[in-house]
Length: 133
View 1 (cartoon, rainbow, N blue to C red):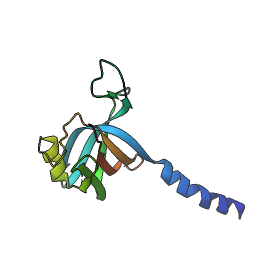
View 2 (cartoon, one colour):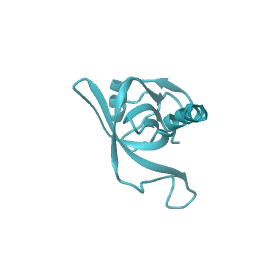
View 3 (tube, helix red, strand yellow):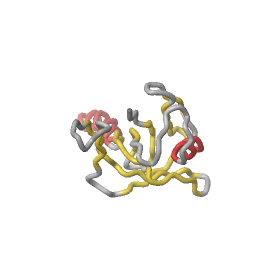
View 4 (cartoon, rainbow, N blue to C red):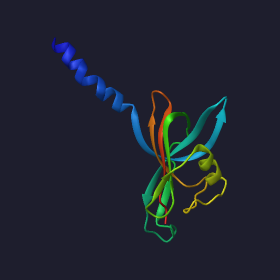
């Protein structure tokens, strides 16, 4: 009986361990046979206060491995409308934004996103455009 209680307590924690919050650059986003897939490059975004860092933000890539995830019908995409206001976007709007369309706060392929992923299932749960001044 103790083993069953232990497993019941352990299982939710295992599921949560597979979900990760990270920062990433989008390297590719496309639809193949009706399924949206995205390739991400994990990065670190740090504040910097140096002469060679005029934006005040430094993007560092310590691991150049590109990871591929698939979208589900529950995947959320949030793009900035203004400095602090997001709107829920479609995959098509994300592609348009990566191509240069401005929805109020511009971004490009060098703009990092906050991401939530399920590593075990290779699913993207949420993409949120990072505010960069």
